[in-house]
Image (tube, rainbow, N blue to C red; front, side, top):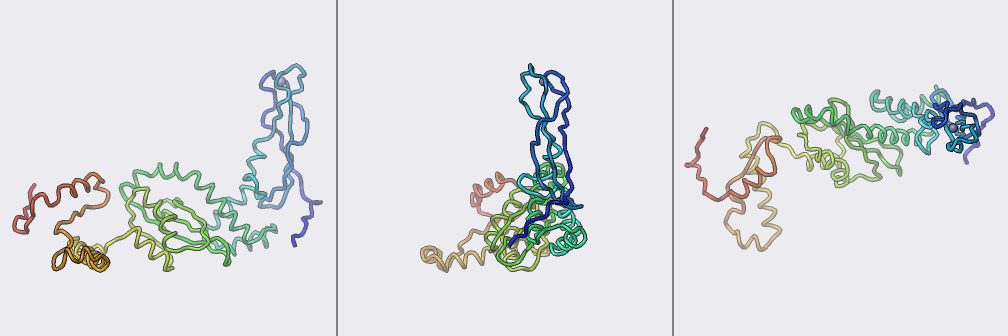
Length: 307
Ligand SMILES: [Zn+2]
């Protein structure tokens, strides 16, 4: 059962509107009633935030029914939550910059700061923090666009897991500037969901992915290998293509009888292939290659290097 909170000794803080005079007639605004009362948990403890409503006292003013309240009081919390933004930001800082665990954060908040908060609520606040942070992503990503175009991305994939039965928070971070690229709460994570919800949107940003850091959790490893397929740098492209063509033709011929009959004893794939450094190639260039391939047979003997 939830214990009723003792509100007798909770300090009150009063907020008045930033506006002090009527914007219509210029009269000094007068207090009319309490527009809002809300218990807010700050890092120093709980307070009752009282938002006082003010009105224009001029009986002939057409704006006399307008009520003015404090915007600062509204900005203390996120709508529907009782934790102040300062708590949310602090929790996010501890987790993502100081790398504390949810358990450590919970301990500091309850033991040192004497706040009433559950571990699950800490996790929830982390979710809110990430949402708030995410509101700034597009700006911060834009800021670094040219850098990412030139140098690509190094990303880390983390999963914050509470006790079983709760959603785990999956986060993809960019490691050079510490931007968070994608956050998804998942109840269970197969490699398919990780691929679709987490990695595809990151891939869709269109930057070269130069490295991925993650746990060796199987679903993560499979998803990463599928979305960000990569080849060890010492392998020649021809060797890689040989392997890809070999494996795929084997599977296709095993699965499809029609193909098997038609290509019995022959090569399924044509000899050509097209390889280009990522970032230097557009969809049009690939289409161009596909359109013109096989137009003229290319023999090894006819191979020439031209300027
Ligand atoms: Zn007025």
